[in-house]
Image 1 (cartoon, rainbow, N blue to C red):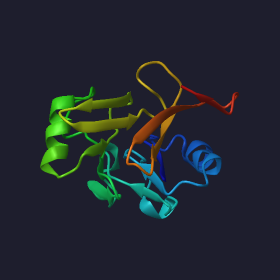
Image 2 (tube, helix red, strand yellow):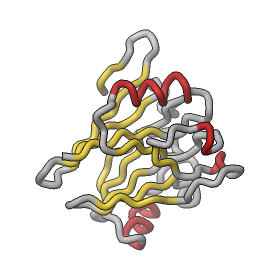
Image 3 (tube, one colour):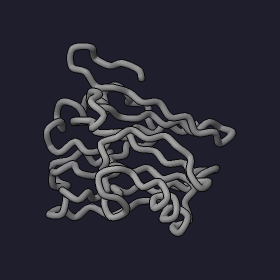
Length: 167
């Protein structure tokens, strides 16, 4: 079993409070992923997090994309701003993931939670840790790859008053 903690679009407003808080709530994860728009230089971030460059991270030297290969999946991580404008274009995202040789794509940018399969590609977006565009509180995702390769995603909401709620 592999556990992934996935956040995106924190826009420097939530680093100390939420990103560190998410880590503290899930210290047992195998991977900590930030899908871009962290808006902080690498020297101010926790090196446990795999961070990709978002459109608001243009001043910083983060990679545009990253891969994680597990026993069952090839996972591509990117921000996604070059593939859609504001709202996810599932066709473009799935075509790009296939082109890159991935069967799972983890992305950000839209500030909208997504867990869909399109064109044989699993598309996952944790929403925004800062502000989701669907009016919900900030959110993140827990992704578990079971020993048989099954991927189970769970949306988590961040709420200061109620420490954490399940979707």
